Image 1 (spheres, rainbow, N blue to C red):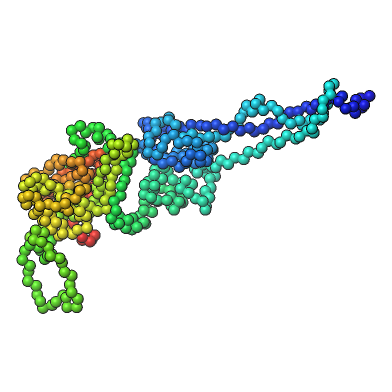
Image 2: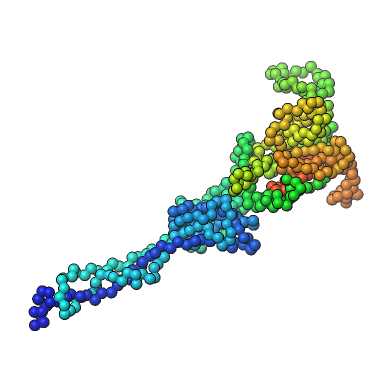
Length: 510
């Protein structure tokens, strides 16, 4: 009887016991990545560079961006695997600690998916029922749970991390953020330095310095190309700019003063020899008769010099052209003092002041004339000899004494010099002064006082009872918006090294 009921159509409703398969349902969640506290006392950071772009994939420990505070430069890595949806702070903008930097879309496991998707295909055998229904298609096996493979990479500092040999990048090499920033500033690819000399192949600052030393000659050729280089003020120096502008109420340019004395005894002893050998075409004295017994042009004509106007000739050298030559040598070593300032554009709120570094040393001379004070410029002073500098100074002084003033546009170019020299010691007996730097007058000004013989008992001379030395007082004022006090002091010491040891000019090819 039971078998007959089973054979009758329409008398049995086929039903299946079924269970829901556990599927790994994923959902997409957008996380706002915030700027964390990267150091004590730091409340904001400037975004220096983004290493990702919107709609780009990013993995955990991949570099997101580089930020710079008042104390250091730090590279921030991603805590997620996902897709970058939006950059909330652009390069060059400042972000507060705790503010969002970017939005990252991340796939996460949906723990509530069982309730939201209760249906699944039947998987068990049929059983009897009292009511008949139409036939049900054969059961279909539920798909197996998808196998999720993790593509998360190891952190570069993980001991098990192995960078790919052929696909090494600046991100994969081991280097502290400060070294990365230092290398980026000097245009050094860290991949070329890996492995470094530090622990586990970490690249240290000394590795970057050694690389720069090996490539010093190509860099020198770049400087000689004669092109200016525009450098935007970094966050720290720009912060100093804003602080000094705010603090300066009486002057448009906040000044930093520095005074010292230079020992010019060696220069004084060298001067008679230099005066004896002034080139004849630059000397205003009657040339000495030369012996015609031997002709230097017997096989080939000797080099000839162009005719020099009388106002370019002089009878003896002074200390000034030698001081200018040595100053130009120090300026070549210090690009900051070969730079001119371009203030921020008022119409553009986010613009910053910039420094234009010149390839040569342009020095202005404060010249008192019957018609007023002028500052003619000796352009490319580093390319001139002491004798030609003396000739240029003689010509400028001659034209300045004329009434009306005979200085030309060539003597006073529009952009002027980056350092101004005022030789006040040639008039009065003062040793020191307080020179004032005016807008557009470069980054520093120096006043030269009257040289005086003194009894020097400092250092080794004091142990021997002292020695009579010729000392020259110099007084500096620098634009404190861009020049730090330590930088000015170090620059003056660099200049001192040339002034007090003029023999260096011979070795370096005057």
